[in-house]
Image (cartoon, rainbow, N blue to C red):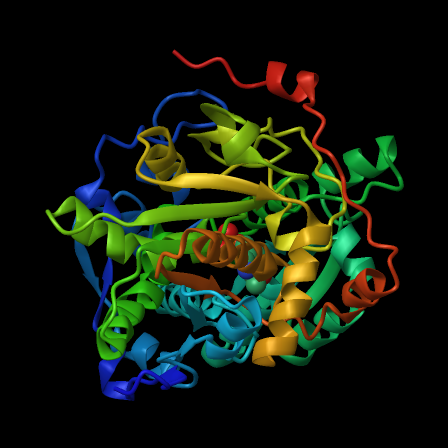
Length: 452
Ligand SMILES: Cc1ncc(COP(=O)(O)O)c(C=O)c1O
C-alpha cells in the first residue's frame, strides 16, 4: 500500500466470524456480579426476567471466542466492515511526525458503534420469543441503534431517554420513532421509580443511572419484555470486538502497528471493542500497546472514582458490580457528550485499569469540542461529542510527538458522527459552552453497598 492511502477497506467476507471474549485472557479474576437485594452472586434465575439465556451465557462465558450467528453477520453487512482511515490531513495540520489512524464507526445506520451489539441483542431476544425490549439512552445513539435493530427483527422497543438529552436532541427522538420505537424522557411518570424521582426533583435532568432503573423496572414487571443495555456488561463488550478485529486486519493492510490505542469511555463498550482484540494478543505473548481510555472531567470514574462494588443504576435494581465508580447516586452535570454521563465503568475495563494494563485521562468538554472542530475542518467528518474526547487525546499525543520527534503510530476509535449534536456545536462556536469541574458527591460515595 502506498503511504498516501487514506482508507483501508475490507470486503464483506472479512467481517469476523467470531467475537473475541477477553474474559479468557484477563490478568486477574473478574469478581462476580451480586444481587442488589441479597448481595450474593447472581445466578441465571436472577437474570432471566431481564435477559435471554444466550446473553446470560455470554455474560459469564470464559470461552475466548464466540461464533457470530449468521443472521447477525448478515445484518452487519448493511454497514460492516467499517473503514479505517489514515488522517493524513490532520497530521499535516498538526505538523506531526506521528501517523494517525482512526476506525470510523459513524457510518452505521444509527450513526455509531452501538448497532454492533444492538443487532446481536435483538437477534437473541427474537430467537427466544421476546416481543418487546425496554432500554435507556443517554445521547440517543444507543436508543437509535436498538430502535433500528428492533425494526430489523420485528421487536417493539421502549426507550427511556435521559431528560437532558431529550431536551437537547429532539431529532434523535424522531429518528427512534421513525424506526418504530416509543420514547419517553427519563425520569418519566410511567414507572414507580420515575414517579418517585419526579416527586422529589420535578426538574431533574436525569442520568443514565436513573434511565437504567426505569428500563429495568419496565422489563422486570412485564412478561413480554426484556431489558437491554448498550454498554458496561460483558456481552456488550464481546459484541463490540468486531471493531478491533477488523482494525487488526486493516492496520496490517497499512503495514503498521499502533504504538498507542485511544478511545473514549462512557460505560466502556467502544473502548473495549477497539482495544480488547489488541490486548488479547498482548496477553497471549504479543507486543504491548499504550492504551488510553478518555472520559469527561464531569464524570471521571476511572481517573477520580473508587474501585469498589456499586450499583449499576441509581434506583439500585440492577446487579452490583466491582468497578470504578463515583457512586450510583452521583448525577453528572449535563455535558453534551450524553453517552459519557455515567457514574461507573464496565467491570472488565475497570479491572484492566486497576491492573495497570490501560491508562485513563479526563478531558473538559470545551477542549473536546475544540478538537472535534479541528478534526472536522481537516478530515471532513463531524464527530460525536463523545468521540471528540478521544480525538483530543490523539491530537495531544500527536503534538507531543512533534516536540520529541517520535514517529508514533496512533490509532483511535471515531465511535460516531455528531450530526444530531449541532446545537452543542453551535454553543461551542458562539462561546457559550460551559465546562464543569467534578465535585465529589460524598453522600453518593458513602452510599456504596456494603458487601462481604
Ligand atoms: C458515539 C458514542 N461514543 C461513545 C459512547 C460511550 O459509550 P461506550 O463507552 O459504551 O462506548 C456513546 C454512548 O452513547 C456514543 O453514542
